Length: 443
Image (cartoon, rainbow, N blue to C red; front, side):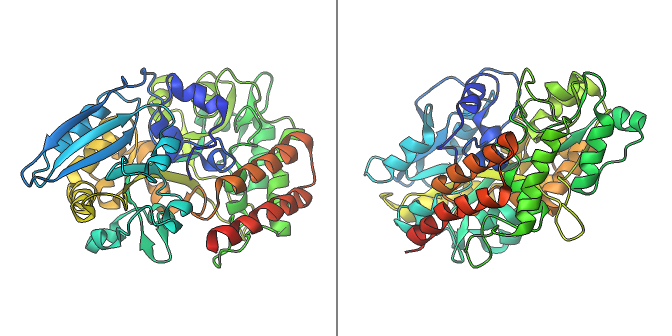
C-alpha cells in the first residue's frame, strides 16, 4: 500500500528523525488505515538534503530518468547515484524527489514529463496497472523469481503479471523485555489470549504490559488482528474477506486490551520509536525492525522478538512486511531500455542490492539468498527477525485494497478500539464501502 493518506502524526515524524523508507514499507494497519509506513530506519539523523539529479552511466546514447523519494538515511542518495553511474548501457539521470512523492509521481505518469524508472511503495497501485501506466516486468525475474520475499512479490503482482521489482524489505514485529517477562514469570505468548494475560501480569505501577501505539493499536493493528484469525482484507477470489464472526472476535480483542488498561497510551513517541520499550514504560511493544539499533543501544541483549500471535489454534502468526518496488512507466521513450536497467540493478546486481539494504539503515534484502550475507542480520534478534519476515511475512494489504477502503477500515478501527463499537457492525460498514470499490477497480 502507499502512504497517500499518511496520517499527520506520521508525516511529522517522517519530517524529523524517522525516514519515509522505514515507515512506508511497513505501515501494517497504520498504512492500511491511512497512516502507512515506508522502508527505512529510525536513525535519529536529519533527512537527506533535497536535491536535483545526478547523471551517470552512458554508452548507448539512451538517456533514462530514474526517480526516488527523498530518503532520510545518510549516504542513500550518493549510493543510488553511484549505482546509476556504473551502468554502461544508458545514461541514467537520478532525480531525488522531496515532498509528496506518491502524489506527484502518480500525476507525472499521465504526462510525457514523468520518469522512465521510478520506485513506488509496495509496487504500483491497481489504478496505475488498470490504467496501463506501468509495464509488465515479469520477464525480468527469470530464475530469480523464487528468491524474492514471496509476500512482497505477490503484492506487486496482479493477474499473474509482476509490475515492480522489490528493492528492500522492512517489517514490524513484537519486541519484549526479557528481564521483565522473566521477573513476572511470563513466557512469550503464542495466542492473543495469552498475550492479553501476559500484558495483565506485566502491567505494574507505571509500567504497562503492551504498547501498540498511542491510539491503542487502532491505526496499526487491524491487519495483524485479521491475519491472527486466519482472515485477510480480501478472499482469494478478491471478494470482501472479513465479514466473519472470527474477524469480529479478533478486532474486539483490541478493545478488550483497552478496557483492561494494559495498553500504554500517551507515550512521548509513538510505536515507530523504541523509546517506550527502552525507557521501561512498557514490557512489550509492536514496532519496526528499524528500531533495533536503538533497542540494542538502550537494552543490550535484554530483548526478544516474535511474530504477532495467532488468535487461536485456527489462526496464524504474522509480521507485516513492505517494500518499495522499482517500476517502469508505460510512457517511457524507451521501455525496453528502462526494463533492461531495472533488471540490471534489482535482479542482477546482488552486491548493490545488499549494500542498499544494509549500509544505510537497518533493513532486509528483498532476495532471501542475500540475507545470509548481511552482516547486520547474521545472528541474535536481527537474524530471528529476518527469518520471521521470510517465514510468516504478510504484505500490508492486497493490491486491490484501495485508499478508500483504507479510510473506511481506519474509521471502523477507531470506533471499535476507542469507543467500544460493535465489531461486526463496523465490519458491515467497511464492507459497504469496499464492495463498490472492488467492482470499480475490477471493471
